[in-house]
Length: 207
Image (cartoon, rainbow, N blue to C red):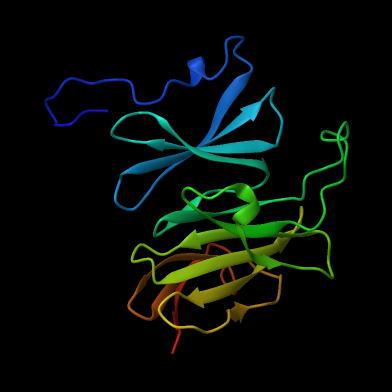
């Protein structure tokens, strides 16, 4: 990183130093909206399991935050925390062999222990459902994609952070792919292959 365009570059995070034997890799990296913090995930020994840590970008020091049993997940910041997905802690000794079921979406607030993380969404009836979260640039909307593990298509659930309402499901057919690119006020712009094999851009009025 550089403080200025013509400034001297310095190492921000060196994945080669995550472990002495080189078996830990960097799996993901997301900065908070204000740039003060960086959430990053690691993988040990090539496992799909991830652990999340949070770094102070000014000092380069890790905070106390440490999240385990994360899998098939990104990190999407909202205010002083972020959304992530994972599973319940597996039985000891079966971490690499247990069948992954009942994926859950959580919200983690900086400084809290993982036990305090808020469960945002899960599907208690269909164990194969997966959840991925994204927050629009203005932080107004939480976009949650629900899909079947290994299958095409998904549904989309939207939560307006500015009002105290429940999620609104705008797609629920699991037949096509949809991606919310961003919003302009209450208009969501969505890329989809619904009726368009080469994809098209659509607009959804959340009002």
